[in-house]
Length: 216
Image 1 (cartoon, rainbow, N blue to C red):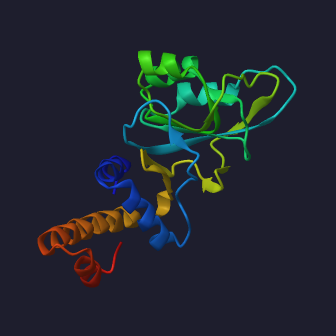
Image 2: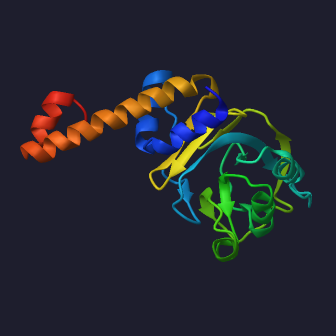
């Protein structure tokens, strides 16, 4: 299955079903902690991860790896920025959003803060998921260390090319090498839950639906 086919498929699957499918297929949790929220809109996002690793510094340096990734990554990418820990400063703002929109990226996912929310909502409506919101700059505090490397975000390992799926329910990382299997199971879960919901409505009993399908 091509990347485009996977992305189209995951757009149709419920994010909760994707999270359940990752649990079953990989034996590991794939969903990020509750703190990671959509800050701009509730649009569903699906795309391959382009990863950026950042770390502490006292130098006043621009986020060069992130700037380069925004300009050079394929359209449709999810820009994933990790500090391998928490930070309460903004890793993303209005100018980086302008670059991401110009290059037709899917979204940004930040292990830290977002700022310029009013501007981003007004001018771009670009999806950004972040751990927190902060007006503070990274300059003199955080610098980029590398791009397209394995990172940890919210305790979840993300590799370049992994599929990121997110909406108002939360964010899930799907390992690229198991994405086709995860998608098939997620769609199966969706179909089974639709049948179960119809039975519950028709029978007037949640217990009857649980007894037949064994799922809640």
